[in-house]
Amino acid sequence: MQALTNRIKHVDRRKMNFLERLYLVAIFKGMLITFSHIFKKRPTINYPEKKRPFSPVFRGLHILNRDEEGRENCTACGLCAVACPAEAITMEAAERQTGEENLYREEKYAAKYEINMLRCIFCGLCEEACPKDAIYLSETFAPADYQRKQFIYKKEELLIPHPIEDPEGYKKALGNKVKKETAN
Ligand code: SF4
Ligand code: SF4
Image 1 (cartoon, rainbow, N blue to C red):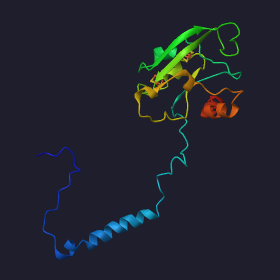
Image 2: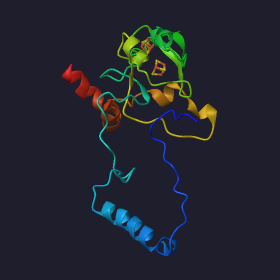
Image 3: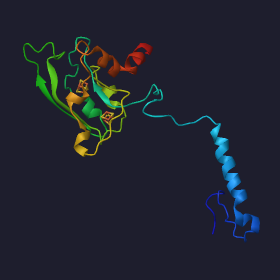
Image 4: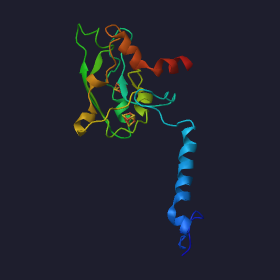
């Protein structure tokens, strides 16, 4: 039979001699390989106590952004949903009422905004399509769960913490976003 690659290895089927049947040499060779690794630098880390630095282009869980006053940026224009190749985003628009100017930046806002994380491929096209800087992909992983319905993230789960009420949480959620914007 013709081999598809040159990586084929033939099995040695000759009879073993007495020394080979004792397996001492083979065990010694195996131990040598094990010991040689003790002094090598470990490629693994003790996650989650230690974390690797994220790549500047890492795309994690989505965040719905607010402005510095804590008002929601999203105007429910639907451009992110149209740009999404996985059809993972759905939303419902609503009109801002008098007295809600401190909650929503513009006259229209997303009363409902959902992302199906089981569909999402973290391509970042929603972030690129958004004209209002209202959505971005953060450095956070989407946490694991046992039920499919838990992977449909609602607006309340996606919204960034309020910058005035929870400045620490807000800064943490912004993460690399500030650095990236300063670099551009
Ligand atoms: S990251 Fe890509 S797949 Fe995920 S919601 Fe945004 S556009 Fe859709
Ligand atoms: S996140 Fe951006 S693109 Fe998507 S609906 Fe809101 S404003 Fe429009």
